[in-house]
Image (cartoon, rainbow, N blue to C red; front, side, top):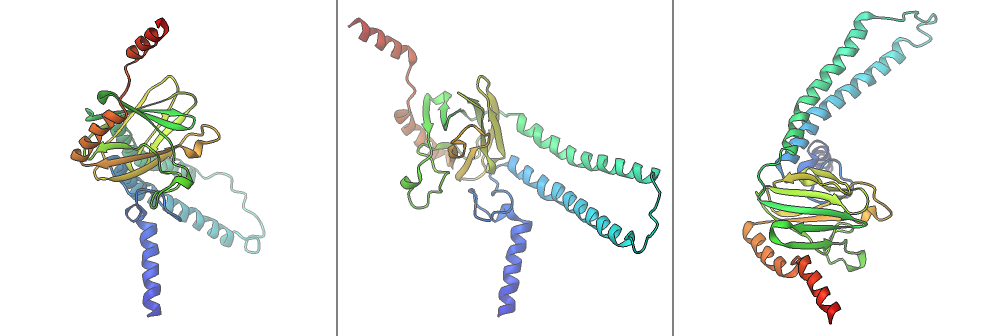
Length: 279
């Protein structure tokens, strides 16, 4: 029985190390090793590149260098070589250690460029969202729906059961599943960064400039992110929460949000101010 339990624990540890992205949920976990569970094709590609290209190459290089260090310590120790070698050059070795890194970089570059190109080429959007970074919260706008609202982190004392600390916000984003969502990202004061690990999305929010990114969530759920650019004393308190829902639930939320977060017409505001001044 003890042997069986031990083997079970070893198997679980191996799964966490080899397939971490398939065993963890959408939010960070204690002692997490690896990426969050993916929710888009872009993040699937990133995880594939990491697990099947980068990780094997890193492991092979680490093992090779460790072998060379151990071999050199044993083969060329002082007791075995009282007279040190005077060799300074070896043409073949220099050619090898120049060409091999070039080949490794090419192997990494080809899939990397494909992923970068797929992320930068934005398909026709079904939903457009504008995200504005402030010190220290996010403002969101659905330009096509006349919706605008701010999203602040919920303090620890106000959290409800099941809500994660430092990741829960008062007003969450809602997007439909299997729809292209284009996000226009900017900032009002200093540099910020809008990042959602499960979608493979991360873009800097720069004052006076609009960066664009996109994602298409392939499953429903609640997904968390955070500002990923040092932006001041409360940088760690700018969470991002996105709810991916069915199209029916999204339309229901949209109808409610149009009433709750309706964007005011600035011309009407100016006209109202003028009338008040005249009176």
